[in-house]
Length: 412
Image (cartoon, rainbow, N blue to C red; front, side):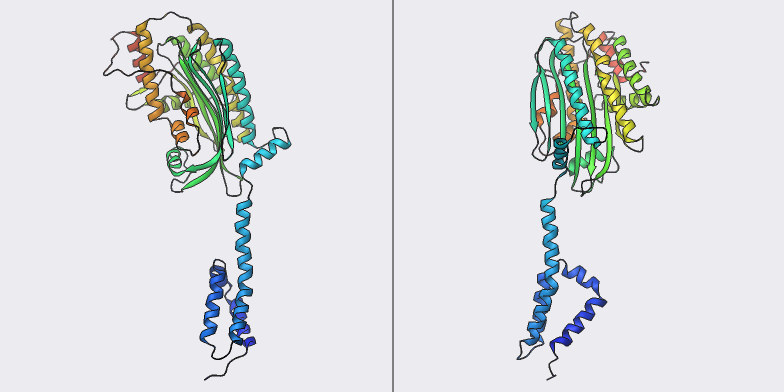
């Protein structure tokens, strides 16, 4: 039997091994310090006969090595559990100071759209004579919204002007849906932290001569694990959907939006008008949803810097009242008959089809955990109808509208 070596010789050998092969400890011991102790203790028992000295030294050495790794592991776990969320950080910032031009863009966008919501709701209430129902709500993971809805008014059958501020995690189905227009998003990841804020509005007037209007302006930001901004972009637009077309209304609507665009980039209106016609296209009907307006998405640093893009968003949103209210004032009290009301209901059916089948915003909302379904579906009209194989009469105003929707013109 070979003579038993002293514990100091074993410690010296192991210490030399550690110095020469530090990667071994990093890979194995960092993730399994207790397994390290068990293995070294087992090894010492096999090489020791009749003496506990070597085993004791080996076990003590294993524990000495394992404790720092265990402490490091537990420290990381504790740090993850105690990490302040992005929503909590923003809530603290809003408590401590007013929102200024130096504040994070997400807070500035939230402040701006809340101000515009109040202005728009106030103007619509003056026009209709009835008050909006106002629901304020919060999300469990941060954020919330303000949903303002008016139903069965004097002018509006249904009107929704909504604010939504969301902190959360994108699930895989939503990421895959958004990837088509946001290539920086990896469709193979299971989830992704994000912030989103936007104002969304749909107005469905009672009078079939008055057009439906839709508006949405939004800001989206994805976050790194440390909470810093990973990617950002703005999106939005506004579009008009008449049941009975008055060319002068379409021209006025487009001209007002063009003025807002031209203040920033003269290429914006033609680009975003074309984008609108392409996006609000009911593929299964082979026609546009309405007479268009502007639409854009994914406006990030590749397009322009953040401040300039935010200024553009502000001007577009502020253009809503002058673009739509003069039209509504002219059409809301026009006479109409039962046949014309029936046509409005049929056109609303097509509106519903687009929103539920093709609209990415609706899909994103319904696929977001914890989303408020009532707020998402507030865009749908109060009433709509579907008639089997319905076709408008040749040469009628109804047929002219369909012809325009199948071949959208340049209104300006």
